[in-house]
Length: 103
Image (cartoon, rainbow, N blue to C red; front, side):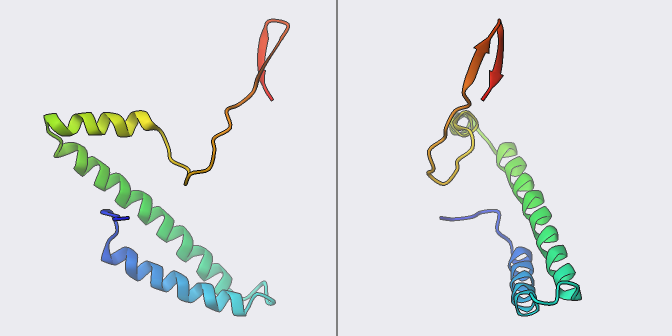
């Protein structure tokens, strides 16, 4: 799968995060060790950067859209989120006394 939004900066951030992950694992017995905070911050920073880059790439894709790609964009938007192939279970609505509630 090609990730057009993946950048060299994200690659560097992933290496730092993975390095801190190993260090945090080795210090897992010491809950107050500073490496746990560093690892948490690296994860949060990378997550925020991924969201930013994906949004930026989506806006770029939309700005470059032409007549033919508008149909593709429509299919993407209408398809909804993908969850890795797991079956989606819809919410169960129960009507009681004229009101509906989710079970």
